[in-house]
Image (tube, rainbow, N blue to C red):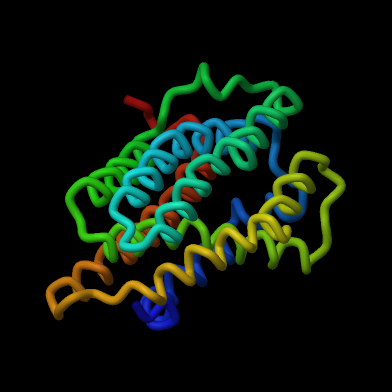
Amino acid sequence: MDVDHLREVCDPVWQAILAHPFVTALGRGQLTDEQFGYFIAQDYWYLQDFSLALTLAASRGSTPDQRRTLLAHATNVFSVEHDLHLRVAPALHVDPKADAPGAVTLAYTNHLVRTAYTGSFSEIVAALLPCYVTYREIGKKLFADGLPEHQVAREWISTYQGNVYGEAVRELEDIARMTDPRDVDEAKAVGLAYHRSMVYERWFWDQAKRGRNVPGF
């Protein structure tokens, strides 16, 4: 699939995410513990089903290398990102397990898991890509702007702009570029899966900004 084209089509959403007030405040270390803690809790819940979607994607991979890579990513969600969330949560005075998934968190993960169960392999990869790439771009941008004094914000930014995470993004992008839709209909489905994930990424930041005013189910 044409990863660059998928991004170009969604450029307005990309720009809205990179300029999002919550992202900007994170980069400046201006989030309160309550704001940052709610975001971390929602990301914690998101990663539960994100890992499941990666595992399901691995079962659909067309080559042994693809399957090994995606299974490794599903494991790394816990060893890198999941552990980061549990490590920084005490500093923010929050217990992610005690919080409820927000409406956007549930909608986004339902989209990912449903696509992983019912979509083609190309659709699954397209649906997974936006989370990977937007976090890398946010991490790189905020790092380039200068790390804030806030220790948790520094650690979050450093994780997502770092080489380990960057290598994971490159691996998924390589899988995407080697995975072509079979026909016009599948190509449209791939574009839709990617676009929906991009919109959910934007809404996830909106949810973080509103905080616990967004109800959980």
